[in-house]
Amino acid sequence: MTKYVIKRVVLAFISLFIILTLTFLLMKTLPMDIPQGTTPEVKLAFLKTQVSNGYLIESTSLITGYGNPIASVKLLNSSTTYYYYNRPIMDQYGSWLKAIFTRWDWGTSYSVDVGKNCMDIILRGLPYTIKVNVIAVIISVPLGILLGIVAALNKNKTTDNVISTVVMILISVPSFVLITFMIMIFGYNLKWLPTEWPKSYHSLGQKALGYIIPVIALSLGAICGYCRFTRAELCDVLSSDYLLLARTKGLTKRQAVIRHALRNAMVPILPSILAEIIGVLSGSMILESLYNIPGIGTVFIDALNKRDYNLLMVDMAIFTMIGLLASIVLDLSYGFLDPRIRMGEKK
Image 1 (cartoon, helix red, strand yellow):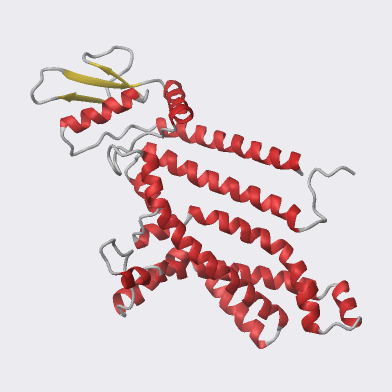
Image 2 (tube, rainbow, N blue to C red; image 1 turned 60 degrees about the vertical axis):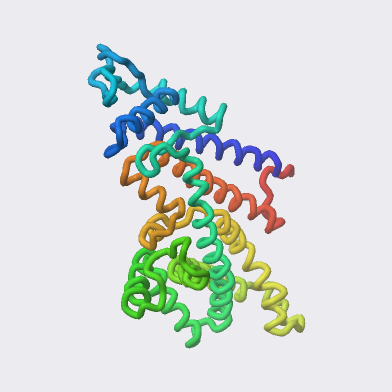
């Protein structure tokens, strides 16, 4: 098992490295967006930062062989014009890796929050994403499993049919569509809830109300998924031979379900819950953007729209690491939860 864990972790880091490398190379083939609408001093400071990071070459005269300069700056009280050229992509890639491994420096933002460290921007938005998604998980997991148990114990009855029908309808509606309707109905029409994420100066009650719409939009899909999964697994266990044997040995239906059926049905369900808990950090990009939640999902959309490549790279790294970590936890949890599953055991 230890050998398998080490192998999965190493493969995850290799996958992360390949994904980020390809993303960086593709990003650098796009034209750099220089901060617009700023003073020459601010523009010059930004470009000099890119030079120090190893992405640009600075010169006070035109350089042949590098094509047209991507930017030129002339200060008001100076006769010197500074010209800037892109370094070769592989040189930029080497500088990018060196900055990360030696200084943990992922670069600065040049359009979303000009001059700010990209990692600081991500860490600033991460708590909002965590809060909303953790609350959604806390609500969705018990409700989804409970509804699945009720549906399984009443298989093919009215209760089961009602739950299955509602689940089928709700699971077909994407979270961003659901939150749009909730904002329109409960925000604009009924005016019961805020139409966007409350600001820091709003009251505590207003901030609490601000969680309702995004949490419900995130929770409903997960509740439906857990309900369907739990119902399917429990129905399969309830019809198994060993459960019938337990009933014939004198156990009541309740005892058989609690002692045997639920325990065995949870084996494939618990790993998905663990992966869901790890994956909450990734949040929902479109949902956060629609409700104006200042989380890392909104940061990703802003960086994509404004072509802030440094910030996009950090966000991509965060999302990729979360996805890989969730897959590792999902794989390993099977072996720990079910003694019949062991990776790398000697015969």
